[in-house]
Each structure stands twice: as structure tokens, then as C-alpha cells.
Image (tube, rainbow, N blue to C red; front, side, top):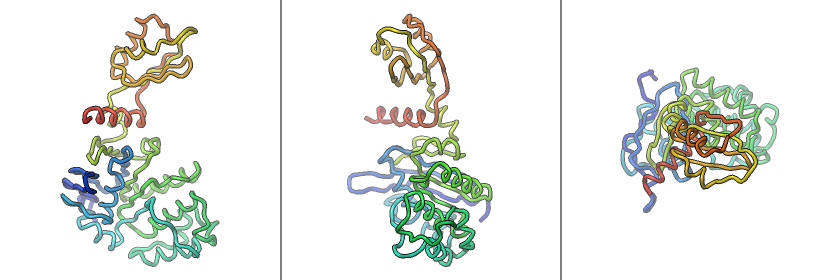
Length: 304
């Protein structure tokens, strides 16, 4: 694979389920060596997009290309590894037997012992695959997805059920994959993972690409700032707070107030104009989670 060959190409792709348009004119291109997070609220089309990418579903409109060929051709050639939420593990076989089978089936296999070690499975090699905890089963799925030398790894909610230590080890391995020129695409609800790991973030909304950029660019696109402060003793007038200019979100917890504002300077100026004398005032940029909520809420309001 040359560095100029796109890893994934979606060109005006559409997919319907009856009256529901799950993917709507989606166009995007992924390049070698990228670590890409796919975000979106429930029903945004993330799972359908991954199914189209992996050849599990066919597009009704548009074209999907993976490494210059159809998704199924790329997968048969062993160029794509996938870790999906759906599907169970085989009953009655050990973890070692299952990983060894995956390695034997891969056109460019790794040594089973190396795959086991990388996924943190060596100590449970002799355990039956249907007798694992949720986090252990996720590590087995990861091992199956990385049983051979693939150019693209697709992960759907990969760290669900993993403890903190396992999650850190998992993402360290994924960073190594990207540094070696492989592309990693993952869908997640853990937005702190996307913020820390991904060098590119795609936000889907109702089957369309709402935002595409680095985590910092997505935060800037949301255009907001977080304002937090404590109020002195006395009644909290939430109606007055909600009337502050450029406010887009408000949370009051006891005496602590948290605000998201589209223009923090204007909001803070008006706050002092109310004579509230806030204490411990902090103004910070949005995290990726707040930016995600702001962007999707604004799009919902626009299309309502």
C-alpha cells in the first residue's frame, strides 16, 4: 500500500431501512496512519457506517472503497481487522485455541503467542471463551481483530467493560499500530478517549457528517466556553441566570453554577451586572464532550 492510496473512501453514500435514512449522502476519506474517532448520538448512523465499511451491508446509493477495492475484497485479502460489539465467542474452546484459529485463517498472520501477549490474554489462555468476564471477552475480540498484519483496524466501542489498566494498555497498543502506518477507526461513547487518542474526529448526526477535524478544531467549532462559579448565601434566581446573554447551557448544583456561553466576556460582564458577586470564578474552554453536546444540540434545533 502506498501512502497516497486512501484507506477508506465514502462518496455520497446512502443507506435506508424502510422510511429511516440511516446514512444520508456521507462523503469522507481516511488516510494511512490516522487514528480516527467516530462520534455521534444514538441513531446517528455510526453502526451502519461501520457495517458498510466492513461489507456487512451494501449501500443503496454512492460508493464505498477500502484500500482501493470493495470492502469485501479488502477483508478477504486480510487488509482489515474488526472488533465489533455484536456477536459472541465460540463455546467450548479455550482462548488460546480461538486466537490460534484466527491467526491460521489470516493471510498475513502473527504468532499466536505474540497476539495473546499484546492483548493481555496469556494468563487466561486455557480458560473457555464462553466463561470470560466482559472485559476479558473484549480483549479476546481485540486479539481476533489484530491476529494478522492488517492495514486498517475498525473498532466498535472497543473498551466497554475494560478496567482502567486494560484500557490504557489497549490504547498504547493502538498508538503503536498507528505509528507503524496503520489506520485505526473507532466508534466510542467514551469521549475522553476520543479527546486523548484520536488525531481526527468525525461527528455524525442523522447519517450526515456534522463535523470533521482534530479534537481541538471540533472544540473551536462549538464556539463556547465554560463558566463556573459559586454564589454567596441567599436564594439562587435561576430565571435571572437563564436570561444571561449568549448562554447556551446552565446547571445549578446547590450554590455552584456552571454555564456554557457562546461569548464568555459578554456573559461574565452581565453576570456582575446582576450584582451576584460570584466567587471562585473560572472560565475555560469546552472539553470534547461539551463541544459534542453543543454541536448536536444546535443541529437538532436547526433541523427541528
